[in-house]
Amino acid sequence: VGLRWPAVWALPILTKVTPGVGLVWFLVRREWRSLGVALGTTLLVVAVSAAIDPEPWRAWLALLSRME
Image (cartoon, rainbow, N blue to C red; front, side):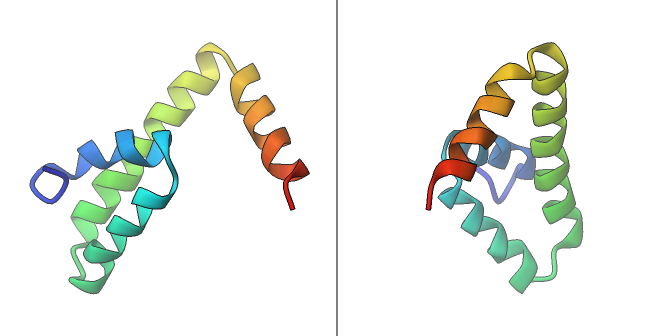
């Protein structure tokens, strides 16, 4: 599904970071538009959710900074 509709990559990337490795496929094949759509959609979802309620993003970033 993600290869046909790159915007679908936003869901797995935002729920678990490791599926983002799938975007390497677009890099290897030099499918810049698909890569841009996947990343742009993900960033748009993050921006909208952070504008609505930024506290969970702050807490998540704080958690990541404490992990070693």
